[in-house]
Length: 210
Image (tube, rainbow, N blue to C red; front, side):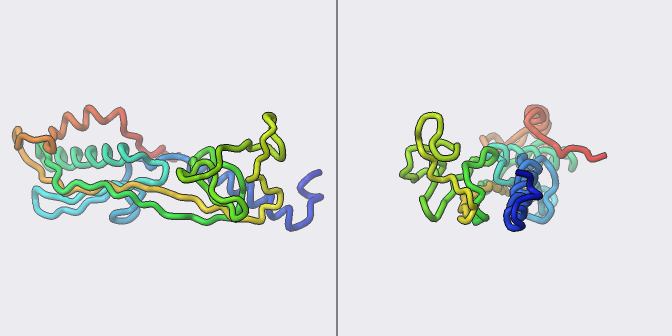
């Protein structure tokens, strides 16, 4: 049966599913090393000079960006600013990594999300296995009875429920003091050029658009 032979409401649902799948594929990448769209945003770095040798730097990532990636990108930005301003070292002061978790409700597309690994909630059945407090031991994603004979309670052929997903983003913030020479001895003081060299292989820049 082609989509043209389906009832109008079913055609609309098929189009919605196709659009949702395309959107997932398009955004299924971690935040690259780039300037944020706004100060403190979750899509890159931002900074504010406080004194000639002191700045507040932030790097926020989307839900696919790991905590250590966010923290490394903050270090890299601090090192870049130090070199750009003629300094040799930088010291992190009042360093903090914020964990921002929220719940997102979307029309029920059903199933475990392979790109994001979110837990989800179905009104009829509760939280999926991806949720850390789930009471479900597991399920097959096939329709009805799967190959192993386990029934998938999350399969919904009518798409008439809603998914509730937990989304976590990380944002690292630190006041940074720049210095010349060897700088003070301590675990929070870094050689700017060595940081740029050692972290360069772990930095992902935005793809160039033609």
